[in-house]
Length: 475
Image (cartoon, rainbow, N blue to C red; front, side, top):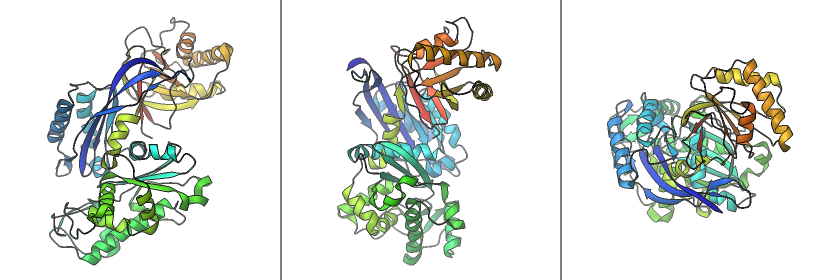
């Protein structure tokens, strides 16, 4: 391994119940076997204790949230903009608040423009929770499907992976804090829109100030368990209206795995996941919720299911309640190769570039032009992923000529960045050929040696020692 430089990575998760932060460091190294650039083994040097996410009515309390972030940065001793990779995500019911998207601006002002900062991105959250919780186990069980269910205050994010690679994601509005109660009692303090819908479906005629009965709590958690089981089973029957209302992103079992659903390893993370493992460790004697929600009741309901219980006992994930934050810090960003192509004038960082197309060196000229026309509609630039491998200089030259021709024919604006992402080690050569060795004025960036992902957006960080961090989101 050839050592290049060390990068600091950050992960922030602002959820329905709690907010958390993780900071890590890792060396960027060149793999002596593959020749690609990659992170070495990361070292977690700061993991904040989760704090309750602050709310003011139907808004996130942005001043309180800013104080959280400032304190975490100060305690981690990295300084403002001290992290060069990772990101932040607003999840669950917090992402439903009216100012959730503006929170991303607040976050970027403190952690850097080139980092992921997004709200209400459930498939990304599912992917991150899997990577932060179950990826290691999935690689150990390389030929066995692993499903991670990340259960928080507002949502349950589901991801299925094989050998560390996520194959399917989903999200349902099942969580601990749809029904908020006075701690130590079952007197209702607040109900989410999903709780209102569920109460009507179950015939529970209760509102704020009234107390739920044991039978009503049992009916609520029964609904959650049944919907979760049906979701994990691949939806053999259509959901009814109430169930469909609770579904945000449909989880689809890959067709080649349907026959072996009972053999899947299941892990659970998130706040309710932590409660499940506490219950399995002997704390199941708690009879009244101590947290002001139904998280404890839901945890106890889930471990009564024999299928889930067998897996929960056998497979214990890492990081549990902070799986999403760990996923952001350690897995949301990768590094480029050292042969990137950049325009002469400074252009990086570039944020929130839509990934408008995937093309290959066999894509027709018309389709390349269509992709560039779509990219031109983005007011601050766009990215295109290039699949496949080009064999030899002649194929690189042919593909470069096709891209150059399409740029001219589509009248692509010379003031808009265009980022090409490619797996092969041909970045500088490809960019030089497309721009006629810098004679054409396009603001072209070609980043090589990156894995392509099913993402909607990409952030491109600042170059350091010829290496660029790239973050994908919107999966």
